[in-house]
Image: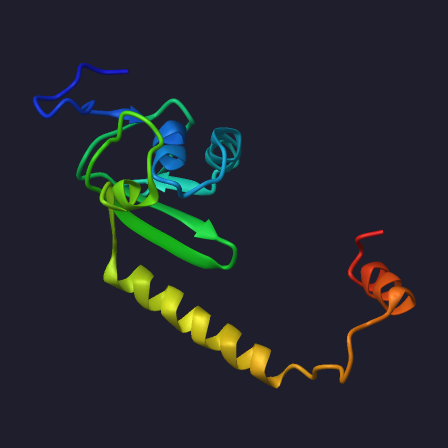
Length: 135
């Protein structure tokens, strides 16, 4: 890790640690797997998990089917509360628009999905698990 800046925060951090610290991934190993798999790009280039990110860098990756893009605003010392983590990056307006559009499509799809009149019983739940490939 690099020397701390005047504010007490480090000037740079590994991309996998940064993604985990700002709560964009649930674990550091998941972040490292995404970076190693080529799904995370810094300033438009594919990087390795040890790549250093600094404030001003642009990070992009796929969140499910939606492309997420943000600018690094800060590098936290550790994984802290979600409010502090959200201040460490700024999502681009195009990325926010894609996320909002995806959310409205999912709400519309959920509204059009037929709902059963009653809760499924044990037999029906087993059939649903089998249908979804969870057995």
